[in-house]
Image (cartoon, rainbow, N blue to C red; front, side, top):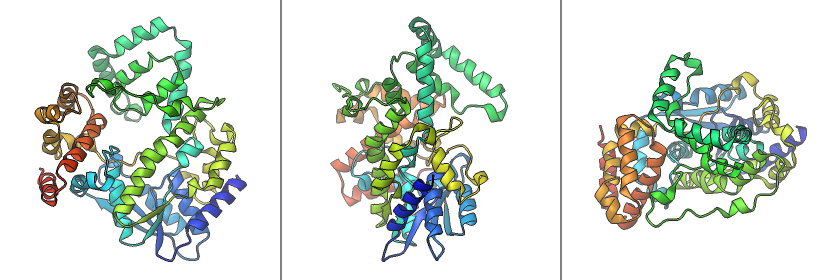
Length: 412
């Protein structure tokens, strides 16, 4: 633990060297709180910290960040944004990312960067902690599934998978879920049953991992003539003794650079803000991969050693809580203020003319989402971001951008 704190302190200190105003993103989670705590520990002045808040209860981490900032004594700035402010960013997404980038947390990331840049020119970020110290919930979920599938006969798994895909199972699960005490209810339980049914057909851990990180389980069915390639990274995985290490390794090669870092880099650069990532210092990465899993996992929770470092600076009660994603309520917005924008991009005739996607499965998911029967916002956001990017590539004129901006801003 002492060695990790020393390495992180050094990494953070070197990334605090700047001739311009500097601060840090703070969500109140383990990773960002650790970075801010180590910044404040070696700063003679109050560190500038920044958080984005949402009025939607299930998406707001700002209250936790404010508590951590108060304890550490930082100069904290927070901005509670409205749904309209978030939606106003959407027409600019194809320009900012310059590719069909479909992680909807890109929206709050951009708004956080924009707000931060109004005060400082460099900001430190806590990205990388999950991949290095086994922080994602899916690591433990996949491990449990892998163990359970290994104990169940193939025939019984096929029967269970068939049942989970029936409407009866969905209605029954929803009914039982409503009867449970609020603390034990599962969000969108019905939507999880087909996913669980898919897991039952798998025979190895890599299939489970790929399913967990994918939205479209059968992309060949939605892309005419497409063939989902086998990821080369899957063939490069060392023979780890713990399957969670294999998932961390794959995330470090793929998810981290292709999603997380791309998201932060494009969002920050679009606002002329420089983002720095202390966790990815090569000395920290090397040390983290030398640690045994027992140092990272305790009581079926990840980041054990990182938590212990953080608890030296921040009380445990301010940190220990369920992990929240950094997102916006896209599922509700697509049924409400973004419905016309999405309907335009998902127009069946236009999809067919563009020739990239088969309209039938997309329209089916769109109708199911609008009806409220299912939540397909992640799948639909993938298509929407591609279509928005393609439309921008086809006509990137300022006039077209203004028209798209007007269409979103006038939704009601």
